[in-house]
Image 1 (cartoon, rainbow, N blue to C red):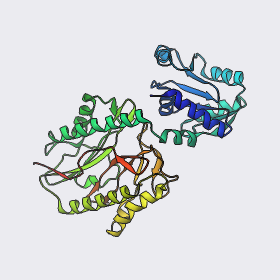
Image 2 (image 1 turned 90 degrees about the vertical axis):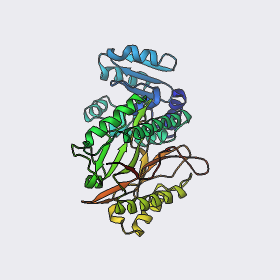
Image 3 (image 1 turned 60 degrees about the vertical axis):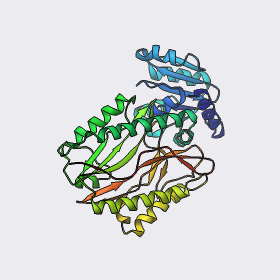
Image 4 (image 1 turned 180 degrees about the vertical axis):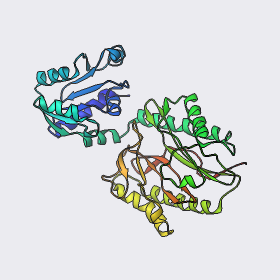
Length: 358
């Protein structure tokens, strides 16, 4: 990962926005800028330098990690005191912060130091939205792991298995294939529970004749994968299969408009129009997709209220769905990379509703 280049890009953005320095507190942004993945780490990036703050527990790890970078390491016994000393020494007054990841106590402490806090949330979000080659490779590897784990797990699913047990098998297999951990709690929702747009695996036993929805992903080198597929237990459910075909048509419609410069709302609208025309507009209540990277949900948000236009290097999900309360639901989720002229599908898993034996 080219951390020097990322810090330089942030410094250029600070200069454009007339911000003296950015105080980076979200774990994902810290990892993005310097590779650190411990639990206690704060990065102060000014227009000319970068300083990383941690405590004694992580000093050896941080020292080795930052050895070949231009990031200065400060091991503190008093975090606030060390931050104040660094800001005063460099005359930093206007500090950009990620307000979604800044505690109220830290914000008050910083203001007590006499600095002005301004938002750098969009600056960091937009930087992280454009993936470099290393990031695309890591996301692709996370996808390959998740895809293989899913295929392997399907071979072990039996009628009567609790959803939680199946989710555990899937997550174990992802880790055994090299994942750091699941990207989120895997969703395995069977029968009527598949109509929960963001359900969780439960102790419900999977029944013969039911649809089963899987929403799963893993982390590889910090980067996430995110996929959703459905399978049928014992035979194809005609009603759910009709929904699956509509969902696939909606996804293809979204694919057709993906290219640099397109408004994110246009992508959402392309898919949503297909579902609305099929008579299920009120059964698709979430956004079409979200950016994917070190966090499982990142900028851009592909939704009716999303902001911004697609740019080359963005990676995001496309996941239309239809949910019929009390009956079941279908969602198909894939991952795309915006290229110079269109898009490249990074996920490779079959979209057909596989049938498992009872």
